Image 1 (cartoon, rainbow, N blue to C red):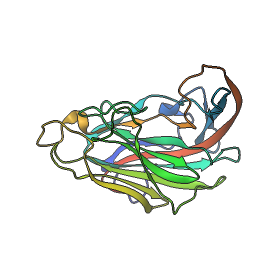
Image 2 (image 1 turned 135 degrees about the vertical axis):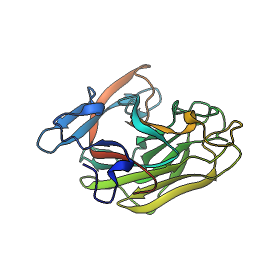
Image 3 (image 1 turned 60 degrees about the vertical axis):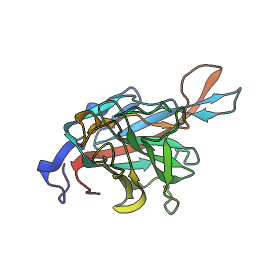
Length: 245
């Protein structure tokens, strides 16, 4: 269902799970909650005994196309960290990107970028890959120090993204909202490069990045042992044109 303050014509993607299944979010670790009409995502936790590192592997790796390309858009959804969720661990939720998003600590490309919502030390954060990112390093974190994500309550998360207007103009934006209040931002940079005087199609917002994890374990190898699992509930995924948190 599209919220009352959002024009249906501006909606690029909507999933409120009212059809009785998980839709685009179907995955082995996703359970549609009949009656509640939302989904639970389970994050199996593993420990690497040689490094002591504990975390989940990326869940639901992939993207969901939105209806039309956009230069600026807001991606919003609801989240509830369940009682077993370890909020002391860093992790990533969902975000948006272009035709070929850059994630996973990969080197930036001319038209590749990404903007996601994450958590670290209980605080929500913006997590972006942009032009100027050092090769071989991961994304840039802009933490919302003034907000703490508690367990067992619903939050409305939203990320507003505006792609830079040309390859020579540093006017891109990424803004994070929690319950409608802006809590973190990054402005005055470039998501894409090259030599374009406008925004090329491949650099526009095209995809929901449907990848989430807790603690970031890249693969099940090197003596890792499953130690348990945590979970979070999600609902009301919506992408709309413009800044509408």
